[in-house]
Length: 123
Image (cartoon, rainbow, N blue to C red):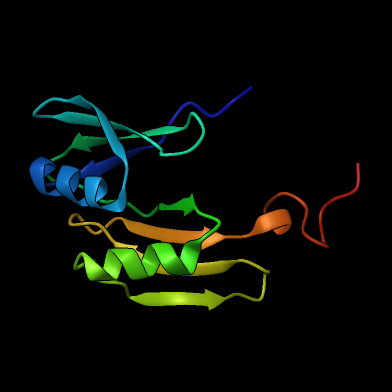
């Protein structure tokens, strides 16, 4: 089994599309009510769905080995972060921002700890 995609609700499609393109994602489907992006690495995708009363309690994570450089590049493009890269107690380094519709995004690097933290369940 493999995760196909995650779809985020947005209230302003054009603003959201520009935002995710600024983050470096490739727009592969573009309609007035739906947009889909390919991640720059790997074969993962995610999409946006226009919803008048968008409410989202989920957090979407995007991983990058050069997290600090990526965040600095995005800041230079005017992207605002609510938290700059910070080492977390669970061994991930994370930066936090919100898209134009208020969806929470974490840009992070976890290395080996992403799938194999010291507290991983032994099978």
